[in-house]
Amino acid sequence: MKTVVQRVSEARVSVDGKVVGEISHGMLVLLGFAPEDSMDDLNWMINKLINLRIFKDNENKMNLSVQDIKGSILIVSQFTLYGDSKKGNRPSFVSAAGPEIAIPLYNSFISSLKDSFSGKVETGIFGADMKVSLINDGPVTLIIESP
Image (tube, rainbow, N blue to C red; front, side, top):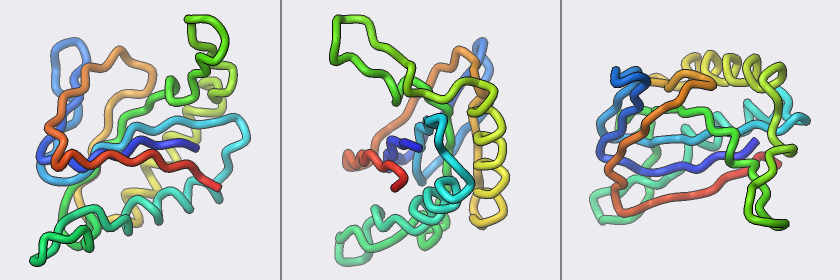
């Protein structure tokens, strides 16, 4: 499992011109799955995300988590995180999980995240042509992969 995490002051995702997910202060998480990902990977990533200390405290240091600041999380599925462009100019996505694996993992991830996190969780629509807009706060952007 691979994520790109961005600390945002706001973010939204639209499908066909309609906003389907929107948050204010919190994190935008682009989420991709590999075929070998398991529930252990999901649980590890959820724990990492909700406890990741990327928000500033009173001393202007990154010491607070999204839970600490009572922030929100916007999850957007992104199979292109597993794009490989080492050969040629057209990326290959053979390392990404196919929909038969990724959809159940995505649904389990969202469900488990909502059970584990007390803040607002918003999502895009898996497999849709989504338009994502955000204001990256910092900017702070991290790439996190499950072990």
